[in-house]
Image 1 (cartoon, rainbow, N blue to C red):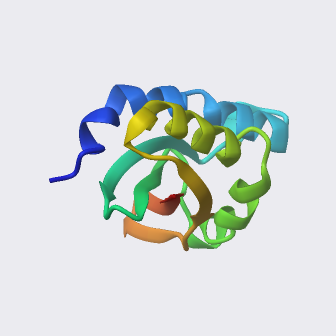
Image 2 (image 1 turned 60 degrees about the vertical axis):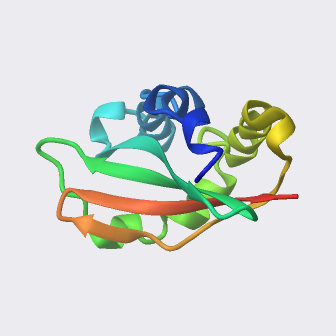
Length: 128
């Protein structure tokens, strides 16, 4: 049984990556949030005892195209972008898990296409 799963409900994940994160990202990138092609959502997937596995979901916005050539470079961009702020997410995850463990390093995996309007980027947070 995954002891961490109850800690990362949809509401908790929404606090870790608020709904307006994509708007802020596109505002900084293009000067207009309406130019953005996707919305972001953080979703807890599982733990194996050595790490916590999340997905950053990219939901295509109506009237926009979620093109693979746009999303495949995002792990590198997200890993260092101050508005996405994976370091802050990791620190908050550490606070949430409390006495159950301590977070260590993190990494973003390659973008995968779930379907035409949904892509995902794995976020792995190591446990010490």
